[in-house]
Image 1 (cartoon, one colour):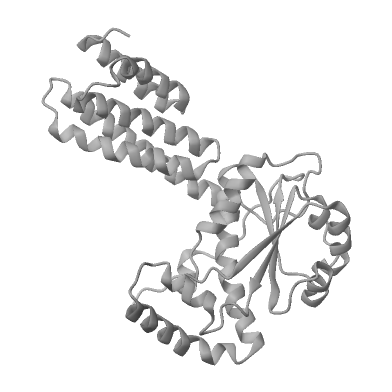
Image 2 (tube, rainbow, N blue to C red):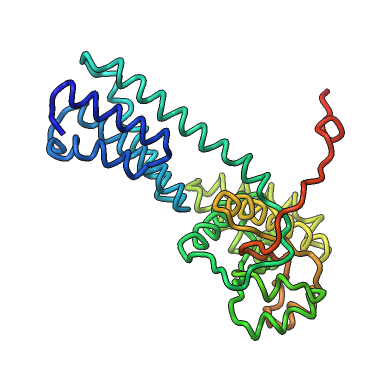
Length: 315
């Protein structure tokens, strides 16, 4: 690519066109050819080019189901986008339009969330011949790890059941639901109830990791104790509280999976004590819910939902 003003303009035009076609790797290549020969120059314009390359890389990583490296690449774009303010060049207007295109495309990609919500449904029959790519399933598990929880306690402990014999053993205790054995991946959400009781070393550790001084940690410990004491005195209440955290993580996983075209089904229909016995869980650890992931066999039915006016109240 010629390093002339016309050549640079052509490169960015091709970059914008590739973005519009959702050809993110190709968009990255258009600018990579421009940037690479000048990558060691101490120049804000060259750094801006690098930022735009990273924006395209971020979009491509989202497309491939890799959220963590995507965020890192997007952070690089935001960092070098700031170089634009310092630039004095006749191409500045072009670069402003490019950043607007990138930001608009980012907004468009975020709107894919609503499409995912339309796609997602409780899939009852899974294609046993289709397996979720390991990289995509790892990213689904990462979404669980990044999910919020009350007081940041992260009480969930996930068991991914891949052993066919174990799945068959679990099925009768799950109301004989076919998803248990048919899904590509089966995730059992368990909770470590004893660890999150007030005053435990685990709770202190979770507060300590915030980098607070000892006085602040002790304050948090007291607030936590006052909140949890009425709950932890009843095993059922404590189990319900920790299970609610798992539902947050599971919902995030299902929605994210839908953005990848992966189906899911949350499962509450099971005998908890039987499942815990089959899994030989330690005392104090309980099963909250189960979720199956894979690919549908049958077409999705129409969503049946209440109208917004029936569920939303403004005051």
